[in-house]
Length: 336
Picture 1 (cartoon, rainbow, N blue to C red):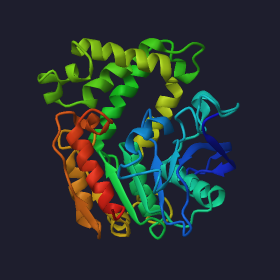
Picture 2: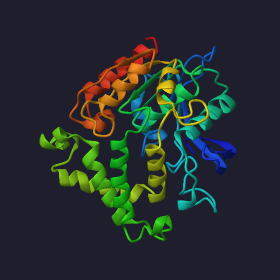
Picture 3: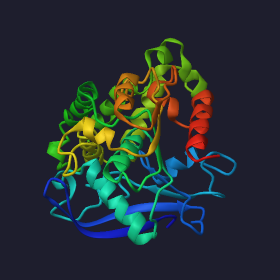
Picture 4: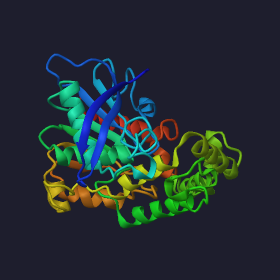
């Protein structure tokens, strides 16, 4: 087993529901230094895992296991940490309780403090939903986090982003085998439909117009769509996808007992030095959202990057220029 597991016990969620026998799966890289000042937390993104996060760091890079203690934490609902697919009855499948990003970060805080003995985090960074968790960390524990770098993410899911997610959800749930999540065999047609709709949003219009899919090995966009279909049908549990999707839809750093829905107050309370790096052609998280956020955050820089790769500009290997800009920002926040 190439990862660690932190048993949380029964966790009372923000909703008031209790997640029974909860656990987080995580992996660490590097060593904690003597004064425990080199901690970098990397949450996971939608359909991501701790393995996928390995593309964002390496020896000689901005986040370097030779210099930093990297903690890569799997989000609830991703099939590794507590999820509909691995929960025991009566919380299995569609009966799994709703998990907010507040709940994810509250449990991640317990992991780093109780299991790892960490008293401060140098940086929380991440792509997409992982970046949303970076904002959440900085708002939920403003005195615990020195810096954040969310890229292709936002502090609150916008109405348009919510509606996009309703489209992929509807595609999956239209499969007659879905059965409100109580399927006896995977809803393969729904999973494939989900993937096709998702692929239309993951890249930009320019990406498809200029046939950039050929740069990642596809002869046609149909070949890309089929590959996405197969990936979702073979590798993802439908209830897990819906669980994380609901977490995404309800992402908002102001929910919970600290800010009581006051979004501007939540942003103004973030003390962490921040670089917000949207992709200007991202169809999920447009740069306008980050520009608004930066206007309220006290120590932030709005640093948009233009890329035809859209949301997937951040996927390691897709856009070298984006990666270079990301590395520069991470180095700046880590003081290198």
